[in-house]
Amino acid sequence: MGGPFKSLEDATDAIRFDRDWRQEQKERNRKAKEFLDNLDPAVYIACMKDIADAIRSGKRNPEPENVAATSEPEDCDPDISEEIDRIDRFIERWHAIRNGMKWMQSEVLEAFEFYKETNSYQGPKYEFVKLDRQCLIHDTLSKSYHHYNFTMRRKSSFYLSKKEKRCLKRPSTRGWDYQLFFAEVKSAENGKQVICCPLQSDENGHCFGCQNAGIELRHPESGGYEEGHEDSGFLFDSDSGSED
Picture 1 (cartoon, rainbow, N blue to C red):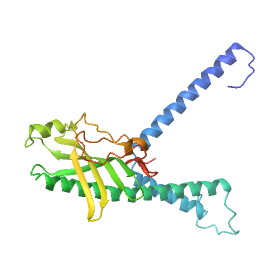
Picture 2 (picture 1 turned 135 degrees about the vertical axis):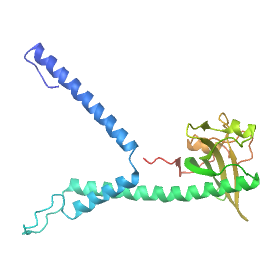
Picture 3 (picture 1 turned 30 degrees about the vertical axis):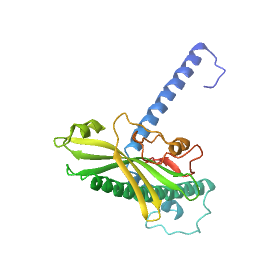
Picture 4 (picture 1 turned 180 degrees about the vertical axis):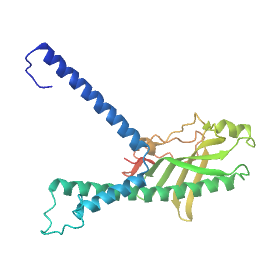
């Protein structure tokens, strides 16, 4: 706030200015967060790539068409180079996450198809909503498995049994019933072994692997899945569909 001040009035003005400035910054941060929360990552990536390409080519401030370039381009400013590298790292990470999400989404949909076939499901058609949580767990070097929570939705609950209705995560005012599922996928000699089932709203079974990884992933209380042991875990485990 500066200082020393010549009078109490000057000090009061400085305090008021500092307070107003902080409130303005807080409001800007709020608006920025709201904007980023609603921003399509693909749009942001495209914008950042255009900016990085423009900086590399020295076209941050395009020259008028009738002015010819008379000198060689100067070396890129270190701060600009650092910003380009940061953008490139962000783009690479986003593509890696996006590709990983596609692979995991495909795996949970395979598990869901297994659930439908096993239970001879004949109700309304389900649609994939999102991958909520995932955790890849290693009990030993030769034994690993992947746990998932994912959300599906279906139109209307008219044809559902009472038991299925109790499993519904939350009803939608637009006529959709949302349901959280658990899936486990693990490798076996004869291919993949899959477990998939809907979760009730208060269901939260135990799993050493997810617990050790710090992932708040929900499991069926009826068991039947790999719960791991005290040393279960793996370095690659994360929330979804995040994308920080």
